[in-house]
Amino acid sequence: MKFRRLCCAFLLPLAGFAAPPPAPPGPIAWHEWSPEIFAQAKREHKFVLLDLEAVWCHWCHVMAETTYRDPAVVQLMGDRYLAVRVDQDARPDLANHYEDYGWPATVIYAPDGTEIVKKQGYIEPAGMVRLLQAVIDDPSPVAAQNRSHDATAAGSAALPAERRAALQAQWRAGYDDREGGWGTSHKYLDADTVEYALHLAGAGDPRAAQMARDTLSLQHQLIDPAWGGVYQYSAGGTWTEPHFEKIISVQSDNLRLFTRAFAQWGDAAYLENIQAIRRYARGYLMDPFEGVYYVSQDADLVPGQHSAAYFALGDGDRRMKGIPRIDRHVYARENGGMILALAQLAAVTGEAPYGVEARCAASWMIFHRLRPDGGFNHDEHDAAGPYLGDTLAMGRAFLALHQLSLDPSWLIRAEAAAKFIATRFARPGGAGYASTDTAQETFPTPRPQFDENVALVRFASALAAVTGKPEYRAMAQAGLRWLLAPGSAEERGYYTGGLLLAEAEARTEPVHVMILGAKDDPVAKAMFAAALKLPTAHKLVEWWDRRTGPAPRGEDIYPELPGSAAFLCANGACSLPLVTTAALEKRLAKLTAP
Image (cartoon, rainbow, N blue to C red):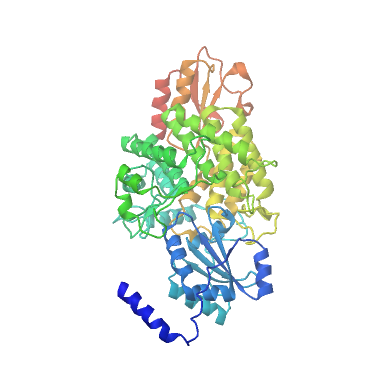
């Protein structure tokens, strides 16, 4: 290296009369996403390139460090493009619109906002040069549409038996019999997919039970042995090539599913996984002073450099090298998911600290993210919004806290969230619920997102059961009509478990347990705790103390008894009174046995 430098220095005087080499282009000027970027593009006769990234994403880092530093790319971008970079976690509207393209997603627009081309994943420098030049040479839009369905509402919210069977077959066909889990490319725990397996297992389906058990067992391999917490997924079609980012929504989904499985089967291994996930979330992604949760921890210690060797180390050796970056944004959607998981964990285990953590985070969200009109902001200051996902997640969290404590203030907040959703996100004609405010003219145009509408149907169905109010039943039906529009579910491949769960919960009554007795009676307390452990999300557990007010929903159909008792109710009728906790537990075990 030294010799080459000397040679170059020696030769420089011989080139004294030659023209100086051109200066390398400066770095790409990245802009914010806004309507003004397209006005600027029209004035300057340029295209707009959107780099939709995730701050925790390894290949996003690689693309930033290589592709967008390449001189030829920089030159073309500077000459003919306006560059926009957006963190998808910060902009749910863009993330939902382009979710089919993964991160990084590259979208190129004409100055009028027409999409010309959409690309998925990492693009190496030479490929990016070809892409940029091809758009300059021929800016005709490429026929590549999002797979997310944007249909009008179906004619009915009813799912015919033959179509239900076909969607179940579609879901089953996605299971990988050789490696385990659903799908053959990326391995991870998709919450709705596995929860539907648990639902079928509870109804006596042995094959679904085996698929759920095997997937949960394999998922253990994605739990960090040093710090706890779950890596996002494994590549290569196996469970042994993890991508090392840890995202709070992945932690909350895993907490919920392992909690459900623990309630259903009592396997101590599930409880160990729960504790490992919670230990990581508290130690790395929870604000120690506020009790709320950050978004993610990066996959890379050094952006763009693979970190497999780093994550193979133990705790002490890792810390000597440093800690991967943590995104300390606090989003309502992500915290709502964590509150829901913690509330369910408290219900199943009876451990009070989980409930305390859930209430602490919920109180912070109310103080810092609640909007004056009743919904929730995503961040402290949103560039757009409101977004459906934030208010929906908080509504589900409030409903879970109400079930855990029967504190009416949580139910009031859940209803307020539902009313905000109905006002701001419902599409005309009952065609589902858009991800962003339907009253605003935004780009991209507000439209429904499949998983959000699944969650909305489940939330509204549960709220209808608790309150007895028909407007929430109507909300669920509107979401189902969009989800069941012709072709919508079929486009999902094997990701139909969430729809099948939502449809089942909207169609059937929840398991209903009514506890009668004084709130200070230890027998009634024990019965309530036992009922909360029911291994299903589709349950309604109530506790009526006659001394404190009327029966829930005005259903005063229970006899006067000398002591506390429990009743199992359905279709307007109830069981004989169960007067001991043991009798209730035995009846619940029989009720939920396959």
